[in-house]
Length: 145
Image (cartoon, rainbow, N blue to C red; front, side, top):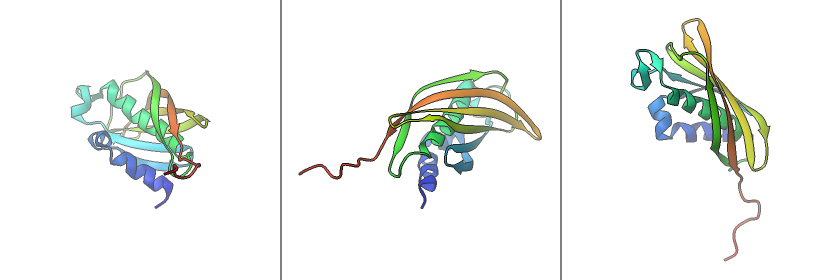
């Protein structure tokens, strides 16, 4: 199993990822694309997704993009994020495209663009900018006994 496969499997094993029915479309170093259906249970109006679900898919895409650049055994977690919503999220599903803005040793800045998909129509509905705290594997070896 590659580290990218491990990352995908780790994310999809999270209960919230299952609730959102996330699906990876693309996964490459520094780039992640994730989709999720627009479910009635996540809408505040008929067919219009609630902002929390939009933030969630954007966060998963952005922070996962940063995680793809970590060394084997590394992980990360969101410590800050801002989402700007500028169009209703209506359609059949969302696609979030995550990328890395700046990869540091301790912190990574990452972003995601979120699109609502309805047939051939694609509406850019949100942008997220986030910071992830990186947890790198120890290079010092095992602790002394």
